[in-house]
Amino acid sequence: MKEAPVPPALSGRPLDGAVRTLFSFSWNQAREAVRTGKVAVDGVVVTDGLKFVRTGQTVRWDEAARRPRPETDLPKEAVAFVDNHVVVVEKPSGISTIPFDEKETGTLDARVRAWLAAHDRNLRGARGGPPTLGIVHRIDKETSGLVVFTRSWQAKQSLANQFRFHTVHRRYLAIVHGHFKGGTLTSHILDDRGDGLRGSWEARPRKSKSPQGQWARTHIEVVEELDGATLVACRLETGRTHQIRIHLSEAGHPLLGERVYIRGFRGNEIPAPRLMLHAAELGFTHPAHEGDVRFERPVPPDFDETLNRLRK
Image (cartoon, rainbow, N blue to C red; front, side, top):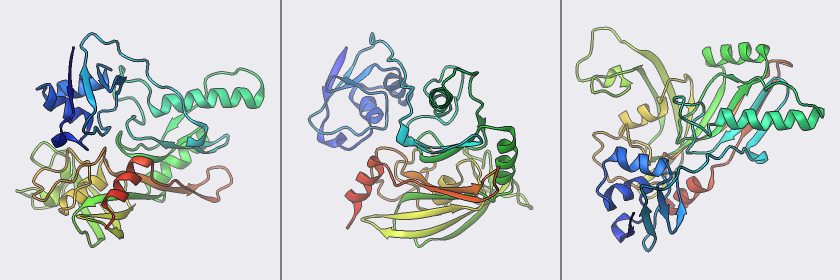
C-alpha cells in the first residue's frame, strides 16, 4: 500500500493522471488501478479516473483492495420519458452505453433494463419476463446526455430508419479550446486516417484521388466566449463515431478533456474533469403516434463547474 498527498502541480487534474505521476505508473496501470477500486481519495474508493483531485487530498493505492460492486441503479430523475415503445434516459459520464466486452458491468443498458423491470412490475403488479430493450444509437463513455432505447419491434424498425436517414434531432453542448467562430464542418471519416486514429480523409497527409470514408457534417454555433475557450452547440447532420470530437480537433479546437484527438494541438491545454461534451437535446418521430417528440437536459454539475470557472 502506498499513499501520497496531491501537490499543487496536480490540483485540478483527473485522478488517473495523478495516480500515474504519484506512483510512477504507466497510463494503463493507473487507469486499471482506479477502475478496479484499488485507489482511494481521502479514504473513499474512487473508480472514476476522470474525477478531479485537489491540493491537500491524499491518494492511496492498495494493490490488495477488493473490487467494489458496480453501481446498477438508475435514478428516477434520469428517465426523461417511457412508454410501451421507447424509453429516453440521461446517461451520466463515466459509464458505457452498452458493454465494451463481457467483463464490463454497470452499463447504461443494464441499468435501464433493471429500472424497466421494476417499473413494469409496479405498474402491472405482476412479474413478467425480462424487458425488451433495443439499441439504436449510443454516446461515448465520457459523454453525458440523452439516449433513446426501443421497447418494441415497431419502435426499433422506426428509430433505426430515422437514425439511418439522419432525421433524428441531436444537439450537443461542448467546451472547446480557443476562440472558435462556428460554422459547418464537413469531411469523410475513416477508421484510420493514416496515424492509427479515426479521422477525416481530408486531414490525411497523403490523399487518394477520390474521397474515401463515410461522409459527415456537423453544424456548430457559438453560444458563449470563455477565457481561452468557447462554449458551442453542435448539431449533427450525420452521426459517425466520434464525429464531433474529430471535426472539432481537426479544426484546431479540440474538446476540453480530450485525450485521443488532441495530437498536434499547440495551444495551452485547459484541464477538465472529463470530456466536455453533453447530449443536450434529442428529438425524433414517435414510432406509434408519428408525432414529433423532443427532450432536453441541462448540463450536469461537472460540466457546469468547468463552464463557470472559464467565464470571463
